[in-house]
Length: 318
Image 1 (cartoon, rainbow, N blue to C red):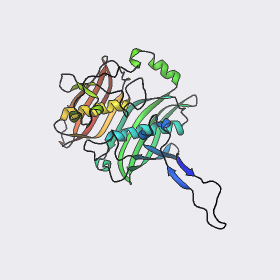
Image 2: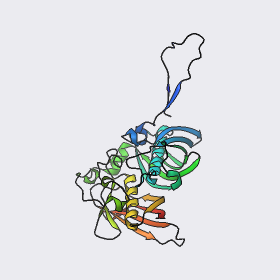
Image 3: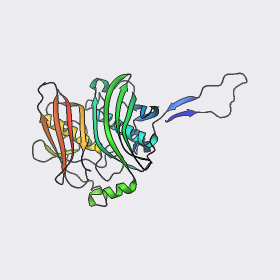
Image 4: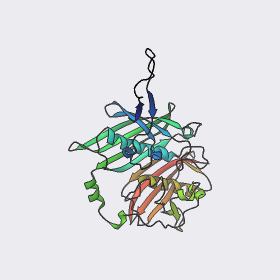
């Protein structure tokens, strides 16, 4: 819990005057617990255990985030809910289940749904109440090795988003054995091909675009800028999961242009690490929907002949 209690020095009040109550100041949770380098990218503000493996958390989304904002600037991006869920899993693992800082996490899958009406940006920062339920805990020598988590994110009592994920926690030594010292574990030079136009990718700034053309319809190459201050907030020896989910959403946007695709649900399964150096192809396939009310698109990422991830997006076209 990171609600700080401010205490003054020795009292200087006159005898008999009531003492002022200490002020409670809200701040973010320590950035190290959610694996962020910048405090501006920490969206959780507190955590307490309710009972067993159920927890209540609090958070806040800023009104004008440089990346997690819709193209028209009126709404929080659905991906911000996914990032908040990811941060909740890391925070709980470290603070409630004793996973040491410096250990690594493997995200096997993530699913999230959002209510567009509850993502609208108001006159104040968006304050959040989260309910997290951790299940399927597996322990190895008194150390948490695996767990699942389901999260509900509420805004003024209304359900804004929900989601779940499965995590594996590994020691630094185990992670080194998993990753090895291959050339693909290092970042490439900053030079990259020209990305898609922001309008095609559903973005407003070229730096936020993570795809480039291949010359084939419904197929692109992953082309993320490793200097991006949000997508690559800290150094990593692989492409982060949030970048892959963003690539899926941009592919859906490019596939459905000139209409605007607004995703409401996303289900992603991660099969392998996405390396920095080999080309990673992103393919999108629309799925027919008999209701004609929603659009479903399947996106896959492939590298070196292996599928890296696949995402199923559901949303609306306008």
